[in-house]
Image (cartoon, rainbow, N blue to C red):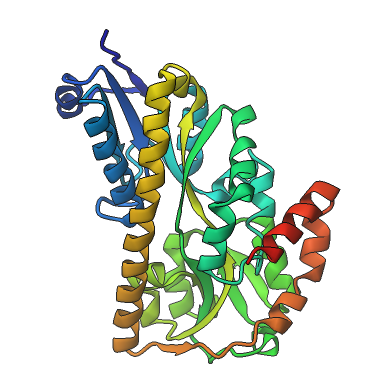
Length: 328
């Protein structure tokens, strides 16, 4: 029996003739949402997962990937995935902070020493524990993807110490943890839409922002804020989650195929991300950006004490943070 789903997004029924033609040969068609454009490492990761699933099920199960927010922005797509309107979603941990509380704890500033440390945490028992926390919220976590490390950049000066940040104005996302992080570092947080950052730096409304190399590059921010400090204050993972409703319609055998394909896709996605990070870093340096690497993070980490005191309050959260920090 063929499974056909109608997507209801923002009250509008979307009819996609091309997608229907692709889905016609499949018994089950799963629709996956991503805010990033086609070709982006996360999109390519889910595409690789789709190819493996289709191959291992002899074409019975197909995954259609909808990039560029075609099915809605991250928070909307997550909600629709919870309701089973969309089958899968690729999103940042940060977008789940108000839904799955543990995601806020594992997204704290300076929690991870490096991206390699992050991988060791998520690929082990702690990652399995985190995944279980999604199920009560009608989501099945399938894979952890890379989202890079966020660092500071500005138009004024090279930043090497915490004191260098004092009084400076930085754009952050509308997120309480981000705002409190900046306050603890002595800087001023200015939440604003991402699309306004370039002109705000250019006109002096803010001094800078924070993000990873690919975003610093693709946004053009390197043109107006040439000082990039590799402090990696936030290493926030991405993830692929599936609607529990859609998941439970699959046989245990097909669920195993999806889990294996998702795990394999994460390996590819991480490689693609590393390649893109290096390419973007080389590009901005060639264009004149100054990258400060010799940052002693000790003082930055010590400044986070009040942030951790505010957000890590339960014995369970304190234990989780300690186990993450102790992971080698």
